[in-house]
Length: 171
Length: 330
Image (cartoon, rainbow over all chains, first blue to last red; front, side):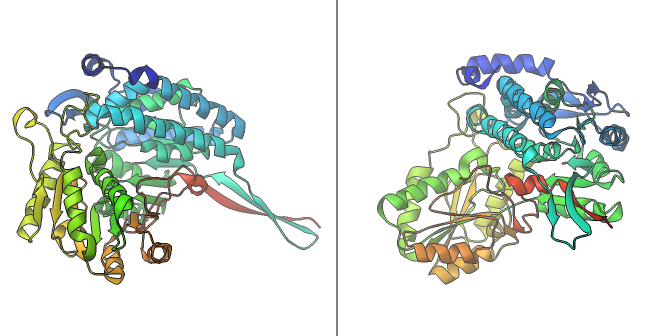
């Protein structure tokens, strides 16, 4: 459900959506494009701070799962499927991504409200619009990254290129 | 917030692995699934939930990870440098805590003073104060101190009311977990014992909300800048008010902090405002405003608030390496 529709929902409708979401939200690790269990099978309790109740149990990744994800990320980086794609190709994906975040704005807002207790109105009116703007902004920036050619003697060409770093971890 | 990190990382062409905060595992999974639905390669964005001490540490210590971008406490942020140093010298980018000073100068009156008070109320109580750039220290010149405090109590006491965050009319939910509630209530008690005066709040709500991790919006006056509440981040809806005699003392107090993320000054005097802009050690500084900005402005700290610059074009470049390529042509 998109943000426009989300802004019309009542308290009772949000509560109904929350009850459904507890059973439908993906709780696995998202590795290689699929939701999977942790290698060691561990889980942790995802608690709603509103009353201390259990929302669901989520897969608890450990070093083994990180190793699995990093191996896939490294192979993807070397393949160039993303890291060497034309800037415009990456832009197209990221603009589409921003659209899909907007179309799922109600679900994303609800997830953070359940997990963190943040008021749903703040999620819908402030956080989600900021998330979408962030993805769009960095999509716009992709083909604005430039290198330089510096002044040299006649028989030299000196350039500075900008390259992606590799596998990046965000915590 | 995760999108402030993964968006520039992906835009720069990196393959990105996200380890979300263990209190909020669900939305990151859906965000990553949507990236693949949008046509992104499955290896370019992955999510591994888990404990920071296990999954988080393993990611930060991995020999094939080239950069770690961390958002969280200053204490854990420092561990990231250790993990990087003990593994492969990966780049470390940190966005950590804050104890944001908002300074209210003696020339304030009328509409500008009222706007300053209202902005200060939102600057600390929005999102339960769980904002690293929250304005949690109000540094007020003694000439307007009594008037400022009276107005803040009048307008701030009932501006944010605890309730069910699924109710669209509610503007204050619980803190992120019960451990945070205990920490914040403990800091309020410490402030009391150090001589702070609780003007309003100071408790968890009784009645139907008592099972939740709630803390009522709290204002504490008479705080000294070396008190616990002025030096440590509460990450909750608690504001400390500090009285100063002039600009020199305000600047000294504002800068006497391990943090330097966001601050502001309220004044009608542009030379005074410019002095504060130059003197205050923080990454974002606002004049007659708070919590404003846009994507083009860097967001990030000075000192132990961290070394990252989020949003802005510079952020994207921080997810790239520069390579010198020298061609001999003869």
